[in-house]
Figure 1 (cartoon, rainbow, N blue to C red):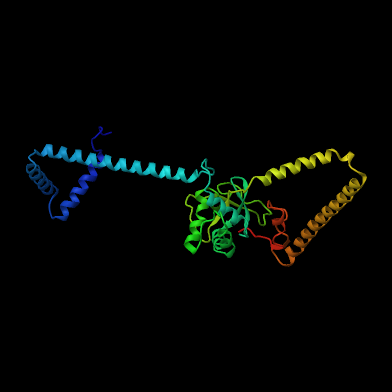
Figure 2: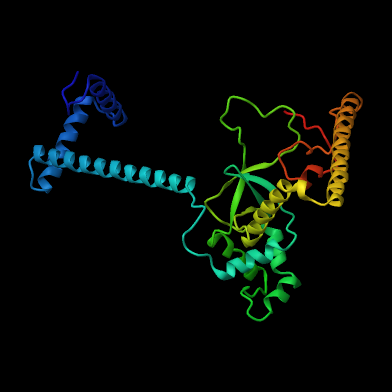
Length: 320
């Protein structure tokens, strides 16, 4: 093994081979080429007022310094990339700063419009997903102009496409809606997608760059006024108290509840009958017109109540 700082046998052999190749290119022997290099080195050292040994040491020091600078630059670049990746992976979902009142006004207006939202899963929670183009279109609608022209309105003025996009950008700035992209929740797992999957929810993740391309998707983080949740909680509490006090109800009310329970049981019976019918229909169409037809394909998927009955029918998805 060579001493530290000394070339190895392989390096010496490689240098000798390179020296012989360069000498052959110039029509010289290796000894003649080596003598010519020594003469050139001595001439360069004399120009700088140094001996050949001093000049060689100076060249080595410069090469070492340049190599160290390159290594430091590579390390700095790697650290910057690592910090950038960490920033992309950890996007703040909440902010202590209060949202812009204009952004809240824009969010309330868009929530009241039909943006054709769909349900998605973000960080294990159900959220509403919508496209940018529908939101921008709603901001350019006569309904927005009418709402913006009202006295004390906090809605920003919208006159063209650019101003509509600027108004929409208030949402991600105040963390009321963020851009997301679809991801595969089973990516990196050893198993495939669950069997029997027909059509379920998108699983999404927040993107670092909040852009406003018309075909991009945003997810609502703004949940609106909290009085609705409080009213629902109060209603549940009143319902529980009413059930507990059922023996004290008047006879007519108890009789009405009995009829209501019978009606609900009838609806449940119809639901089970429909489930059996859709299974029979699928079995028939599976052999008659593959890959098979489902009635209400989202009926047992993890979606909302109304989404369970949309669409009315669909073909069985075939896994590739």
